[in-house]
Image 1 (cartoon, one colour):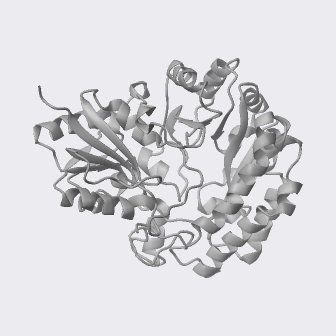
Image 2 (tube, rainbow, N blue to C red; image 1 turned 30 degrees about the vertical axis):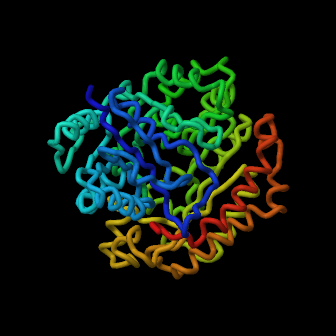
Image 3 (cartoon, rainbow, N blue to C red; image 1 turned 90 degrees about the vertical axis):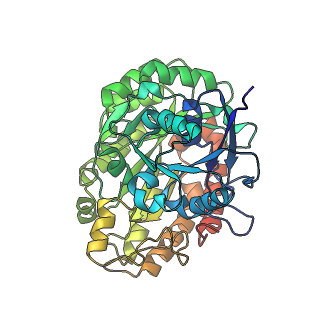
Length: 440
């Protein structure tokens, strides 16, 4: 009897300091579970989460598949080198591999470009028959009814009790800095409601919170309404991310709350109108005040995200953002520097203007997490990084935490119980991530 084909699936870490890694916010790897769901049962899968455990390169293995993001690229290439040194073929895919296939091909035996649903079965058949091609490209966006998620690969690993679920893919906006728009060509597709509900029901007894990881949950409002109507009565708690204009609709935000939504991540990005226009998010300026008011009135907490490094940013910009986040009682907030991801309009613009510090910051040995990899107009890169960290420290100070503990952030048992621990995890996370290397 022929033995099973043995496949290693690897989720790379951002990087390691010796044997240590950032242990905060570790959730199940949805790309891994999705790939496992596409793999036929006669293939024996062994999963390694590089964030939590050593990769056993010497475990019996016929091939390794690695999903690559820009922040994990350097580490992923190092992992691939170890497998290839042992004669194990490596397949790489994911956002970074799709946007930077020539670079990725230097480190892999095969590169998958695009979404895996249409390509993985063919690549796996070729791999098993010894006819693996150097590249596979999806020539269309597959219908999302083909998504099959197999979470059994995670075993008993100690992840946060949060289930990540896709209700759709892509976003119709074309924000200058966003790799999502580049990967999906500014398109949006939704998944069948019955498939999403079926996945929720299969998980609801073992998880405390659902996170719909769509980049813009409300991009197709009617589809979102249909899903939320189907979720009413399921007794679940969920969060998601969406653009601010969607919250202008009172009925929409009320339906979010009645279907179990506790809060939403929104990209505030900047309080400066010229900055918003530069990033193709001018719609935020007119929507911001009313949208945040509607979210509060509906009892939904806000995770507000800010970006710094655009041309109008000065030192006062950071304090204004923190003040705004505290005054609006954001449950949590991100104060991040602008990152030029390869394949985006932002990266191409900064490269053409000669403003990149490194041609490929994600591979440069000098780059550290929280570094700004380009030269802003009115501040130094070091100033932007330092002020981002200072903003996080002020927002997650005890004074701010207590001031933001208003009714909207404590109006549900889960939020009441989690408010202090989640804010303290963010406070702790600042020092852990600051200066962390990529790779090893």
